[in-house]
Length: 77
Image (cartoon, rainbow, N blue to C red; front, side, top):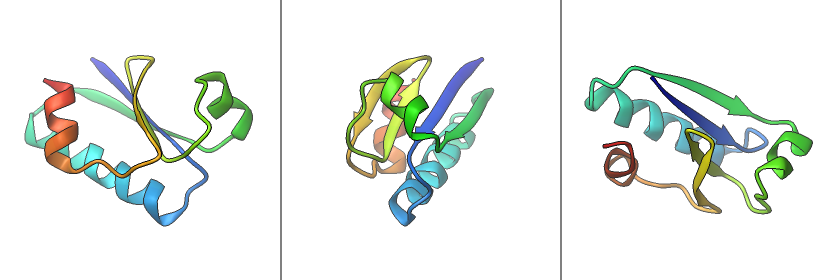
């Protein structure tokens, strides 16, 4: 099972990235755990300075932008 984390403070961009990640996982019929990380200290542990960020299985895939569902789907395959 994949673990997907959305790093961010809960701003509209963070929410959009979370929605897109959830939709991408559903489209792939992927079993995953989606977690929203809002604590700044936890976010910094990943070395992320710009949010929102997408982390898949403990690897930062993108930071500072809202990825489309298609982009996330490609990363999850």
